[in-house]
Image (cartoon, rainbow, N blue to C red; front, side, top):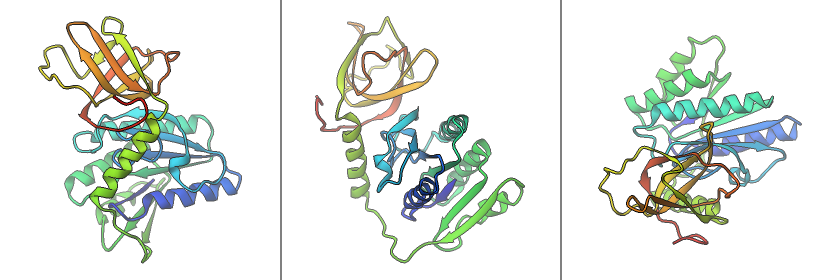
Length: 269
């Protein structure tokens, strides 16, 4: 599990680690738990990718599985992020993978960052914790790691050439990843009488649903993909979603996220 503040090279470290494992002949998985700066799968979800050969960028790894969060920000979703990360790691372990790298989101300083990191560590129980630090960050995490006999903590200082990313760059990156995810998307319509809705009700007076993030789940509760709402008509009992999830995939439940996005992609509205 790789942790650190934003712009310290966590994703680059995970890429180097995964490539080294693949070159050594190991079966490698990467769990992308950075819901705001996703590389594996769309933003607002935790993605699991399997590495079969060395690659140049984590964005080149297709998502083997997704866990829906519904927001680009971890705020208010700490427990879901911890649970989702643990589920993706458990799925990778179930496939007998030799090396699993977990790329965590950027931790801001303060009690909220501490709570998220603690929850992730307790749920996932990694063998190794890699802390990428600028100065004297995360002493509390280091101390906590000493209490777990199964966990080895590695504190690494940053290379001098690490660059900070601007908010504009981060926004553009999210848009690029969404566009990549939706490049083969189509409008999928369904009657509200044939599915379950989670996180919304007809009493919601919101009228503009276009672009709202939703997670599409099958009968077993597995997230089969994400989508953006193009139409929600309570009176007509009709929901339409822009999604790459094909008609052959069962969708039994639609879970509403907590924000909307506007992406100009092929087949967008």
